[in-house]
Amino acid sequence: MSRQAAAAKGIDPALIVILAGVSAALHVGKLPPAIPVLREALGVTLVQAGFLLSLVQLAGMTLGLAVGLAADGLGLKRSMVAGLLILSAAGALGGWAHDASALLGLRAVEGFGFLLATVPAPSLIRLLVAPRRLPVMLGLWGTYMPFGAAVALLLGPVFIGATSWQTWWWLLAGTSFAMTLWLAWAVPADRHRHAAPPGASPAGAVHSWPQRLRQTLTARGPWLVALSFAVYSGQWLAVIGFLPSIYAQAGFSGAATGALTALAAAINMVGNIASGRLLQRGVRPRVLLYAGFVTMGLGTVAAFAELHGSGLPPLLRYAAVLLFSMIGGVIPGTLFSLAVKLAPSERTVSTTVGWMQQWSSFGQFVGPPLVAWVASRVGGWQWTWAVTGACSLLGLALAGQIGRLIQSLEPPSLQPER
Image 1 (cartoon, rainbow, N blue to C red):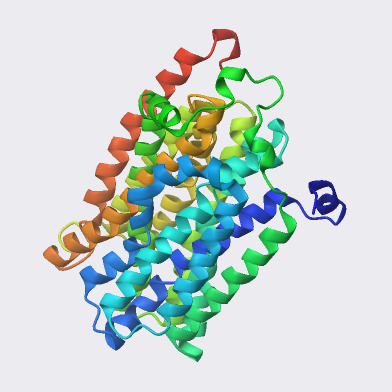
Image 2: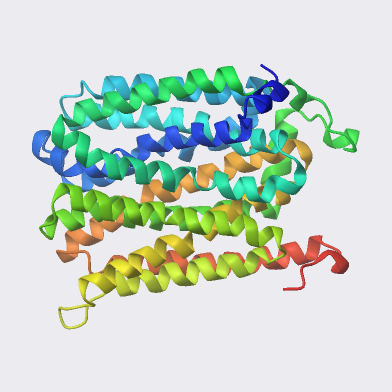
């Protein structure tokens, strides 16, 4: 089906790509509401729960760059279809897991599927939309994770309470399979990816993968956006992923914890969407990154820190978590746009995104177990802010480096005025 035919039917192929990312993110968000049940049913410890949260990122942590390099050879759309199929199969098998070890192994497989389904997406969106729409659409793409996580966090307790955690796993496996069919039918093939775009220099059109690898890893831009994504994603998943457990320990019902956590995840979309609009209007990326990391650092201090055994009232703590997620949401939207902008060449966009995904996955792999380890050592969540605050400080330093790099690459007449 051609892109023109899809548009005639009212279907925007770029939006279908974003929805495919949402269906993949459901598998990341499906676990937090199930943790209390899994701890009781399978004897999962708190640290094992941390690894269950983060193991879905194992493939991204080790193979993100390789998938980015291979995306051109495999085809961007074909890679996404394969990833969704793997998520469907691993999710279906996960419903039959009888111990923590089996579930941990299948979470790693799900991570590989998640990687294949998400790394090519920014490059595919770039092919499907006009350049003037790209910042907005990449900002919208940045919502795939919080939106998918929010839906899973909101619906998970309902389905698990009414049926079982196994049924929840099978439901999302079926959802991913349905999304696979829709993506394969409605999104045009990306064969033109292999041709040089109009106006592009022949030198940037075709490179072998060793050249693209060397070009990516020897440039400062991919490293800066990748490390920035790592310190953002690690603290975001650590806080949002453990909220159901924190509220369950405080005596909240499953439905209440699901709703509170879903809102905290969903409000992240506000920042993502706003980042695309603000970048389009000329706001400097460095300003958005500063705002995000400062708010995330201060938000977790307000939400978790205690003085003389007490902290802020529960309502204010929750408000701080909402600010942490909402304003922090400008970070991923900004970084996706920067990954496209700071890629060393036309043919290294997927590789740069893959490298960014690899470090994002590393942050998500390390963040939740580290926060869980600190909580288990001190007997509570009151020192969570120390871990997330350190991430935010590093993020601020990286944002300054990104700002200086952009200034060095742009002629003064093209630099934003604000």
